[in-house]
Length: 426
Image (cartoon, rainbow, N blue to C red; front, side):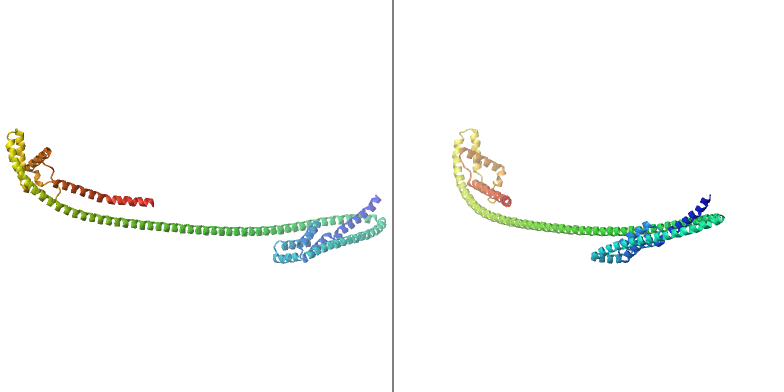
C-alpha cells in the first residue's frame, strides 16, 4: 500500500510533463509552419504552383493551420483568374527565364533542406529540453519522495487534488480539442466554400467561353449562309443573264426568220407580180392573136359566104336537075330531096356565123336551122359536102386559148413547188 502511495504522485507528475511537452512542443518546432513558410517564400517569388504544393503539404500535416489555409487561397486566386494580368506577365517572364525557374527549383530544394535542418535542430532542442525536464522531474520526485514520507496524508490529499486538477485539465483539453475541431471544421467548410466558389467561377468562365465559342460558330455559320445566299444570287443572276441572252438569240432568230419570211413574201409578191405581168402580156398577146384570128375569120367567112353563094347557085341548078331525076325515085328520096332543097334555099344572111363568139349561130335553134343542120349532116355523111373552114378554125383557136389559160393557171403552183424544192435543198 505504501508503494502505491509513493508511485501515484510520480505517475501524476509524468502525466503533467507529457501534457506540457505535447502542448508546448509544436510551438517550438512545427513542420506545418515550415512548409507554410516555404510556400510563402515561393508565393513572394511568383511561383504559385510551388507555393500551392507546400501549402497543401502543410495542411496535410496540420489541416487547421490558418496561415497555410490563407496562403493556399491566395495562390488559388492568382492561379484561377484573380490575377490574370499579373499571371500573364509572370508567365511571359517565366517563359523568357527558364533558367531562373530551374534555379528557383534548386532554391526550393535548398529551402526544403534548410527546413529539414531546422526541424532536426528543433527536435534536438526538444530532446534536450525533455532531458532537462526529466532531470527536473527526477529531482522533484526525490523531493516529493522525501516529503511523502513525512506527510503521507497531505500527499493523499494532494493526490486527490491532483486527480481533480487532472480531471479539470482533461476536461479543459477535451473542450479545447472540441474547439480546435470546431475551428478546423469551420476552416474546412470555409475552404470547401472557397473551393466551391472557385469551381463555380471556373464553370461560369467555361460556360462563358463555350457561349462565346457558340456565338462565334453561329456568326461563322451566318457568314457561310450569307456567302451561300450571295453565291445563289450570283448563280441566279447568271442564269437570268443566260436566259435573257437565249431570249435575245431567240428573238434575233425570230427576227431573222421574219426577215426571211418577209423576203420570201416579197419574192412571192414579186413572182406574183411577174406572173401577173406575164399573164397580162399573155392576155395581150392572146387578145392580139384573137383580133388577128377574128379578122382572118371574118375574111374567111366572107370568102366562104361568097363561095356558098356560088355553091348555092350551082346547088340550085343541080337540085333542079336532081328533082327531075328524083321524081322517079321513091318517096324517101323525094323527102330527102325536099329537105335538101329547103336547106339550099336558106338566105346567105342566115348562114353567116357570129364572129364575135366562137360557137354556132343563134338561129340554129329554130326549126329551119334544125332542118338545115340535118341536111348538112346528111350531105356530110353522103360525102357530098365537107365541114366548113370557119368551124375548123374556131375549134383550133378555142383549143389554143384553153391551153394558154391552163398553163397560165398552173404556172404559180409550179413556181411555188420549185421554190419549196430549192428551200428544202438549202
